[in-house]
Length: 144
Image (cartoon, rainbow, N blue to C red; front, top):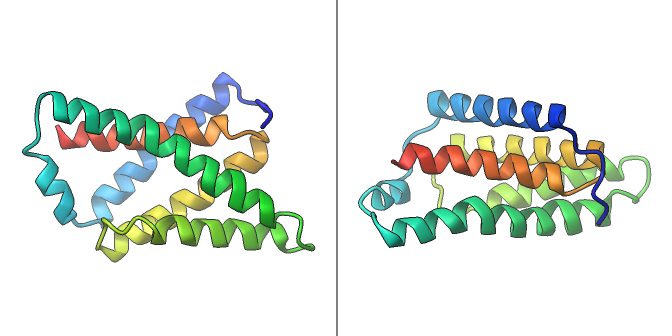
């Protein structure tokens, strides 16, 4: 996978996007049941959970959804790119089964579309991984 065209301007735009998505989710979403359970975790288990949420999940999910699924569908005819974007975003949001609120599903679907667009624009998985890490970092900070 090429490094692509990730610049500091893109990273700054990604940070603003992550903050914007989190604010929108805060107004539209309900607090998820599984998040309430994690509010009582502290110490070393919380550190391990945070590392997996901030680093492991974004890297593995971006490779799977934007790396494999999006790339596999982008070359199927004139609409292949949009089919890939919608399909990978739908699967991305559907596989987050820990969430039960419809507004969270919509939030994840929109985030998936944005991550796909960034992947296509930068021609790299680095920028979507960074945005995904920013979004998850904001979520972990909110758990505190």
